Length: 219
Image (cartoon, rainbow, N blue to C red; front, side, top):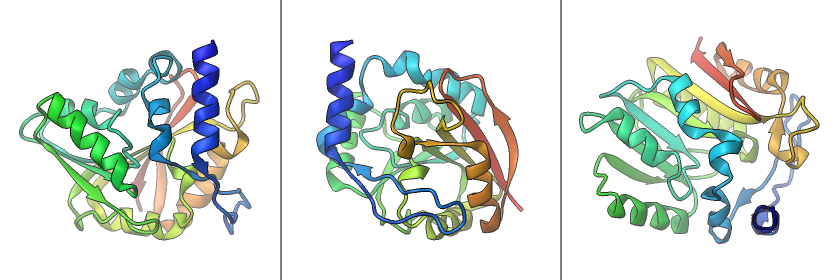
């Protein structure tokens, strides 16, 4: 418990809180956690709190496909995705912080993973190739975007015609989920913000302990 509280404090003190609110929902933008808080991403409790392997199983990542992990951080989900797509597949690991990508590259080297390309993005553009990606994954990331509408438009451009955009977000409907309100979202908030940008909710999965799995496709 003490370790968990220390990690939480580190996360809160290293986050750079964003200014502004979403023009449709009025949701306050959260900030991006700095690389100083990278330990929060690999805390042992995350296995039980978020069940990453179960999440990816529920999403269904096809071997040989091309995926993107936006806000990849030090690669907690990227490494898993790389193994799932296999040698014939590819993962774009995107982040806006060079230091995070340096940590990710170190982790890739340790595990001898060669099918990941790191991408330094911008706050309004993930810098992904057009019409190239089968799956874009945002794990506890979308709520941090300070330019969500522009990001969604660029992500839409990067998706193949039948591509999927998947968001994992802590349940804003549940006050028992122990995280700041800025870092949680309701299903209705997500739909209200994504639908005007050309997305439709294709599947909603609620098999994780604390997070929604929202799977969108392009209209």
